Image (cartoon, rainbow, N blue to C red; front, side, top):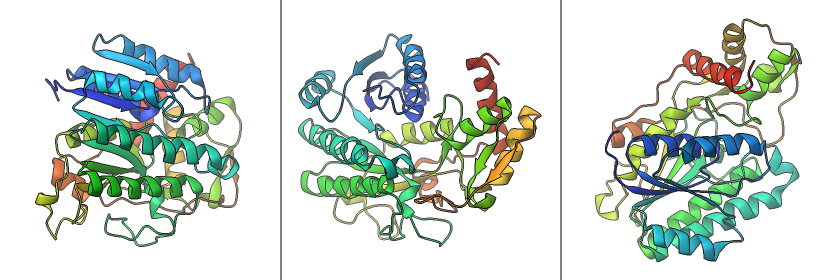
Length: 339
């Protein structure tokens, strides 16, 4: 991905996926305006450490900004930057947290996305890519999940806000002819990951000799997708804005009335949770103490992406194996925490 000489805005640049995408774009020659409010949902030191790495690039500018409450600054800064594309990755994540603090999801997901849609409309952005989630498939049980399936049965308020953002994106694409792509990410993992996610929590507790909590008594599987595979997919998509004229009946991911598409971004190889834990145990050379628990409210037992549309469009297929991905995370974890 060399000589990617574009000006790109990334919201959530201090976040897990936003950091990796920003770094990959900067290494490819892009100019990046990173926007993040550095919320305290998890360890801010981790977000600051990611941002420090990005600031080593002369072509990176960082804006500490709240997308909900600092709209005038957002609009003026982005307008003066004059970007070729926007990746809106900033969001309040976490299924379980949305049960306890739903209002955070209303503002940080729905209102923030509305503000980005309004900004994108005003500056006539060439392509807006918005992060969605496999959680929108909710109670669906037909596997693999594909973009043609109805997504009307979200099981958490987090998923519901993400589905709302998809609907808002389609409306803006239709009314204002704004090219919008929604990317449904499937359980992203890797170095610099979020402390509230399974790989991070499991690794931390196994090393500390503490038990790990395994829900649904281990009867869970996830389509774990390595973070650099996600970043590579996103970079390839930015030059492929959807257009109403290109709509084909056989293209299940595109709208037939608006420049809008939905795409699964996943590895298409679901892994059982116990197999995932085994890979961590093998890499650490330590055994986990497992505490089996019932499935948590809002959780889905299984995810599995049909990512064939992503491959058809970009020629790229996420394919990092669990063993390789877990090894790279644990190597990072040991180095970062000096273990």
